[in-house]
Image (cartoon, rainbow, N blue to C red; front, side, top):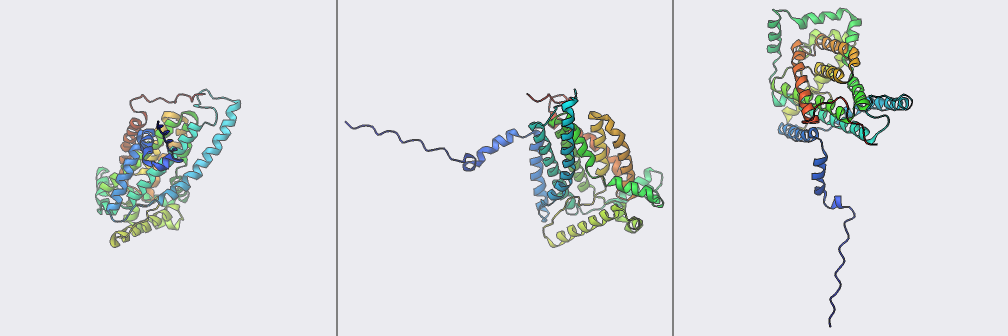
Length: 359
């Protein structure tokens, strides 16, 4: 009798199944993402296509600029948080979301920072290409409208009179260039006391605000008094203000953009490049921080409210913005917070604290 041959052994599983079938990982990654992260991916696709449609490409160079800024700020956050963790070993806080180093919170802070850099990279690419999306400049119309509602009073020209007080100018200049340090410290408060979802809430609000702002800029491009009346602001150079150097940097960037459009070559957008007056995202940024401080850490507004007021004055004195640019930014801030809240919390009610981590 013939015997049935034994069945062949099953082939061994691949040593690296992810590399063998990388596409199989995509549904799991998508399912693991938060709603705002999925939205950001869609925005990235649209933004890249919009930039490519101008014939000037898409640049990842802003990542480096924003990374350097945030790593400096977040490095301080991490160092200080460790000292706070040590303090809490002896003096536990009943309101703290966790009392020590926790992977979920650590990963949440890093993840939120990476996505914030992604938002700003998109923003810089779009802002640098505003002349390609819309080559109109509506400063004259905006300035005339502002004077009309003020009964003919020219606030921009009047504000330049502050140049006679050099110490005041230095205060405005130093405050205006505060970078993202206040946002970094507010992120630390949320990270320490409230949980990673609240860090995401802040980052998503800021990202939505910046992207909404650059869309409005593309619809209604304006450049600001300091670029439309350059000779009226040479006193800033004489007083050695940082704002004069920043404005010169942006003018050179605008020149590169116009050359790239004229020649049909790719544009290497940089962090912080692009000229836009309407809306004032400096004002919007500060107002958003005030709202979050009111929600989570009201005592921070002892600092943030005067910082916002000084920043708004600086935007007008240095000719970055018209008054209306800041006014328009405020309702955009509230809208951005509302959108971010829907994305991060969904149908759940907003609560000040996340549930404490297990264990």
